[in-house]
Image 1 (cartoon, rainbow, N blue to C red):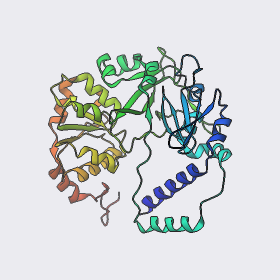
Image 2 (image 1 turned 180 degrees about the horizontal axis):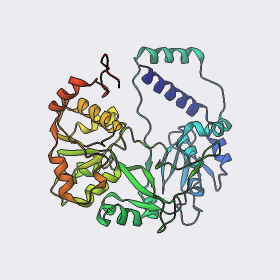
Image 3 (image 1 turned 90 degrees about the vertical axis):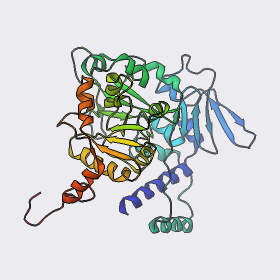
Image 4 (image 1 turned 30 degrees about the vertical axis):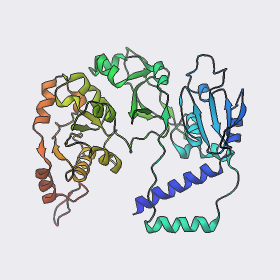
Length: 381
């Protein structure tokens, strides 16, 4: 209940910021140019202008001298017809080059108008949240123009030589390389639309440039392995889901990382289970992802061999076994699908998968429902 309530409060805070942000202040702050107002048939006002996102993420060849971006002042939505669009906080995140809302609150404060909403209305909403009667809203999923991927259509030698990802797999998954960020780009599609991307750091080598670290507010350097596009929907969606559904598969193999999916696409001959692999973007599995996997008749759960991977496995199995035929793959220690170079070797691991009912019986005999061992008297854990 506490976690649910915390999420609702965060959502409420987000909605309050959205309500108070003045779009004109935002445009002025970021130096809007070539701007003019357009009144739509429904009375809404939009400001057309030269794309501001182009100043931080170049995607126009001429600086967008013929304005192609719009800010809807009423709905507080921003769209560039060559890049994509989202709400005004999504836009501010892109301009500030971060996906952390807390880190840009000092910037957002510059754009706020009136104070909080009516106290009585807010109190009623708060009571509703605490009672559990309110349904959790789906977070906004941004949509991008696929043309933005053209700048990243390069296969980095780390992917090809060090990780063994084929050029064909690069093409199928549209994997690329951002030379400015010095990161591998994994585009993510959902329901036929580009909804974001993950950028993965490349390890140090004499053969290529190093990924530059981020500078934290305290001045310390930090190099995150993955960086997501703003409002990246990793908890609501599944990587490679669209492609697998297009293939008409009723069986799917679930792994943690997009890199493992890329290796599967490299090793598959098109007729084996490696052509049916999707990823949850890590070990933190959410209900929306479980619900999406219920579309398949057969699900092989193949998470990593560490503790987070085990907890993710138990959550997936318990959430799916009443809806699908679930098989549980026992991974080799310290080795995920992305570490294999031979098709037969990884298929042999999958072939040893055990039915969910056997694993459930095993877990219920010695583990609690959250995947942690029961504490027994006299046992040190």
